[in-house]
Image (cartoon, rainbow, N blue to C red):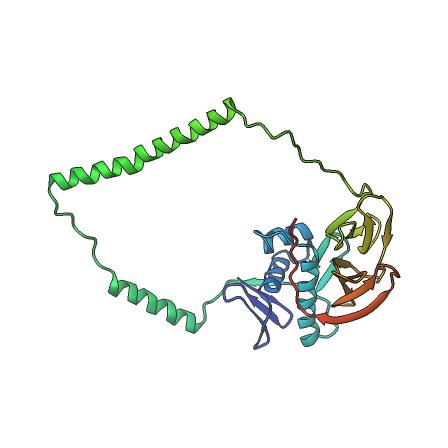
Amino acid sequence: MVYVFGKYRLDDRERRLWWKEESISLPPKAFDLLQVLLQNAGQLVEKDLLLKTVWPDSFVEEANISVYISAIRKVFAKHSPGCEYIETIPKWGYRFTASVTRKPAVPSEEMQSTEASAMISQAVLREPAPVNLAGPESFSTSLRSRLIRWFLLPLLSAVVVLTVVLAIVKFPRKLNGTTANTRPLIALPGFFSQPAFSADGQRIAYAWRSDSDPYQSIYIQGVSTDNRMRLTDTGGDDFSPAWSPKNPEIAFLHYVGEELEIAIVNTQTPTLKRRLRQCKEITFTTML
């Protein structure tokens, strides 16, 4: 399918974005995000749907969406200054606002030539199916092997599985008198993510946003206390805190406009200490 909007067209078969006759390079995930928005042009596409569609087999943070949306907007800003194609719906998702026309994809001449060559090669190299000239004894052996493979082996596997299940039910394993103890560190409502322990294991840093806040910030809290302290208030989303092994500092990521930046804050005097660099494209994953 080809999606046409303004002077752009996106070909999902060749995975290319065109502006007039110029091919525009996009990161794979940015292309996938733009394709989902075009498929639902004019409608609100929630963040959960974007995460499940673009990252179906991975657990990633919502910050990934913002990073790639920013990359798409930069492309539009370069070729079409002043045109806002993507609308941000705070806390919910995004909407593609331009009018989109859908056309069936037409294979390029190069692709048509490649497909034709492949069909010819398959037709030339295809061999006729072998004819079984074996006698009754060979046929009997083949039938016996098929019966073993199709019936006896699955039946034997089912018996083994059933035996194991019955053994577990009849003779449950006893734990060594220990049970896992878990306790919540934070009882406040809101969105928590990306916890990180300090080097001594006595404090934990995390990103948090209440239901009424437009942005999330970095907080620290003692493991054995409910007292917490807000470290950052940059006016944008702050996330991915990481403790310094020796110094009382925390590195984190946050936005400056549409740019993603790495910054450092001192936990003893929570003021922004310095900015390290700006990033154009980062993928974040969280392992719990």
